[in-house]
Image 1 (cartoon, rainbow, N blue to C red):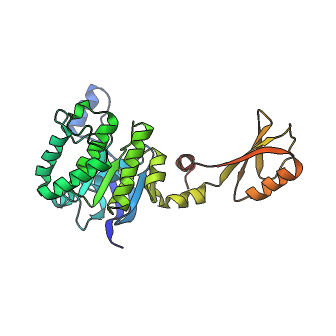
Image 2 (spheres, rainbow, N blue to C red):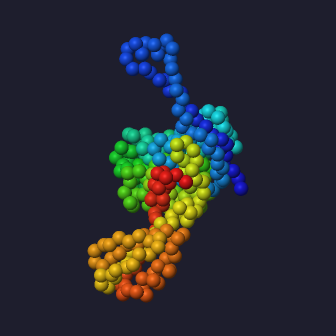
Image 3 (cartoon, helix red, strand yellow):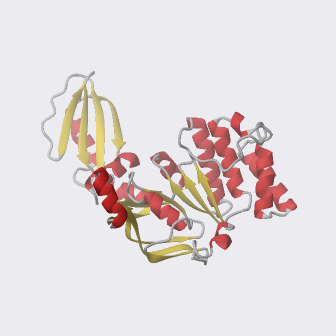
Length: 327
């Protein structure tokens, strides 16, 4: 497959001036400064192919933002190498940024006092987009992102959801091959989030644009990405499919049973019980130790049951446990 990004043994260290306390310490530091080195990213390697939609996540301070800054060419790695779209992101920055897009949920690239459309025209000049291509792309995105009702309004008058849609369109007017999304759904309501996710899916699956998606909302990951990379303390913890992490680490299940009358269920190996109101018992177990079918059959054989439901670990809970316990 066509490789879009290849990272090999990436490391990034930051040199921090260690200033002693007090006036004398400050003066001594001016003469003989002391430094310490903080390693933000350590020995990360991965490859991303054309058309992939990759969730790139990590807890605060995990090294996620530093890695993204290296991938976009803002920072250079201390050690290791990055090749993206056939070039070096920092050394060949002008050539590289013409082929990528970046959407930041907390930072707009639109001019605050200009109508959205005027910002688009400005970006057309910056990227030197031919008129015919620009008009076709603008018409397409206006329709898909439902921007016709606000495209001529100043950006400062837009709601957060409208501004986010306009920002996404602005980042894609030059038809980039690779797009970085950084928290694009942060602060949005349910309807606005779904519009953003739907468009990103369209962008990736219909237009074959490679997507790297960073977020703290695991619903974004489940609905947009096929692959997931997790980093923690500067190191890669997991690199695989979203379904793979759920099947590998999401073994904990809950069987919620409402009995016809108060039931006394004897202890079952590998199953914990929690009594709830209305003759309900919640059974918790690991699916690699207890089969759901066997548990249900055992309960039905001994008791009159009104209702049964089963819940599985959500990806958010799985990720949280990985952060806390590791892999």
